[in-house]
Structures are given as structure tokens and as C-alpha cells.
Length: 413
Image (tube, rainbow, N blue to C red; front, top):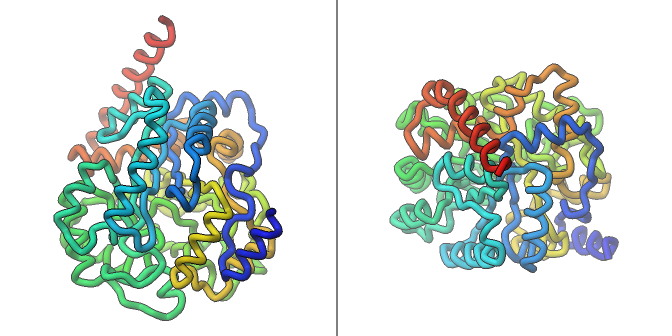
């Protein structure tokens, strides 16, 4: 079956994962690291819309059950991507909510930082919606208010291709450079208005640069970020690196500007983006290398994590085939796949081992708590609740103490 899928992927010009995160390796780790992950608020990312990643409720529920068992507090969850419409958003939202309604006691839908803390306290999955496209607006800015009320907390302007908002990463890779458009500026205005974080992942360099200029000029102090983007600088000197690099990876300059806004950058543990390496299974060391690279570049207060988990490789291939223009990458993924790249390191199976590696490098528990979830919460606290970074840092010891007291109270009953 996997060979058949590989053939399909190659014939489609798309190197979707031949081994989904479902099949990613579980890495050995110390008991101390496993317990630390369980004791810490951990927020990953599940980039797996219904129909392109999962189709059966059981698939999704089992994934979240394993994540809870291994201490993953919550996930940014992609409802829509590419050129999906508002109607697609409604459909995606229904399928996710319908699955979760089978076990309502296990899910906490997030509208505040307190919701994340509550999920951690009660052992629930914190659900943080994300859209990897602005096409869900259907050209109507009024829909941003509805999207915000649905709980979407971050949005990408341009997913790979050329859109009304600007040019995506793959379009610019292929020489089509549009940059941020006036419509894109209008979309940013509404995102800021409703506290939705500007996510520049997948976005072309010029469009991202223009968007950062626009944010810095019109909304100084409002953070933006990259929710799932690998640092290009980590791989540029690899002997087998491709001349242009992976179009999904971002420059040091982009990461630095996101950090300077007060935002964060999150590497994604996705093998085919590791230009010049393309491992069959990303190792804890390789994942830790990504985190460490970003920390050394922008500081530990501006780094987070995201695995970009997916499920079914067959459906990914079908999605890419149906959206061939969005994945016209001049054979990059096909070649990476052929050289060994597979899926993504599933957070629940790799994070404890990453913890052991980062401890060995000198990272403290406080450092890791920031990277694993605290930095996202700081940014979201500002965007959703108007709490400054300084106030968030001042309140943090009290919030930690309160969470500890509540956990001890509930688990002693």
C-alpha cells in the first residue's frame, strides 16, 4: 500500500507523507522528562483538516487520547487551508465538533488563557482553532467578526500560491512575486481589530516582509509570528542542501522581525522540509537543533513548538493532486521524499526525548516551559486580553502557584 501511495505521490508531483504521524516513532526518554511534559502546559499544532488528514472520528479521538496521556495540553488545529471558502470552514468546524461531541468531557474550547489553564488542570485537550488561509472570508471583511467568535485565533494571508492578499511561499519560489496587496492590508486591519494573530507561515518572503512593514508602521507593539516554519539557516550549509532551499523555511531576518514584534517562531518537526537531510524519522536531537537554533537567534522568550501533525498520507496525496498549482514546487518534495523524508514527528511521541536533549544542552525548566507553551500564552494574552508582556511576566508566578494548588486539590480528592 505504501509503495502504491509513493507512486501516486510521485506521479502527482507531490511528496506527501508515506508514513503519517500516526506511524511516527516513539522515542525513549527518562521518567523525569515524561513527568516534566505532563506537569507543563504544552501546546502543539495539528495541521489536519477533515478529508485531507482524517475521515473517521475514532482516528481523531485516539490521537487526542494519546496526546493527553503523554501530557500534551492542547493544539492549534487547522480548520481550513489553501483556497477553502467560508462554507468549507463551516463544514470543517462541524466535523471536528461532531467528533469531539462524542467525548465532550475531554475537550476545552479556548477563548481565553484561563481556558488553557483549565484544560491543563483537568486533563482535557485545549482546542485552539487556526486557519491557514484568508480565503474563508469570501471577499467579505464582515466575516472576520464571525470567524473571531468561532474561536479562530490565527490566520495565514497566503498559502503557497497567489491570492488576493498577496503571494505565497511557493509562488515566490517559482518567480511570481506579488507582495502584500491593498486587500491584504484590509485583512490585517480586521485581524488586529479582533485579536487574531497574523501568521506568516507559508507566506512568500516579499509578502511577509510587506506585512511586517505594515504591522510595524500601523500597529507597533502588536505581535505576529510564524506558527510552523523551519529555520532555513539551520540547513543552508548542509552538503546536500538544494540551491534554493525549501520554500517553506524562513530566513533569519524573518524570524528576528517576528521576535522584535513581541511574537514567536515555531519550528515544525516535518522531515521533508529539513533541506539536505530528509530523515526517515526526525530524531529528538534534530528537533532540539531547530529549537536551539531559534533560541540562539531570537532568544528563549520568542520560540515555541509545532509538529504540523497529519494523519492519512493517501488523503494528503489526493488533496495535493486536486490542488496541483498550490504544490508546483519543481520537484522539491518529490526529491526529498525519495531521499527518505516521510511524515512529521508526533509531539506526544517525541517531546519527552527532546526534553532530555535540551536539558543536556543546559536548558532550564523555566526555559522549556516558555518554549513548550508559555510564549504562545504570553502572545495570546496580549492579543486576546490586552495584557502586556511585562504584566504577563509579573503575573506568571502567581498563576503557576494557583495552578499547582488547584491541581493538588483536585487530584487529592
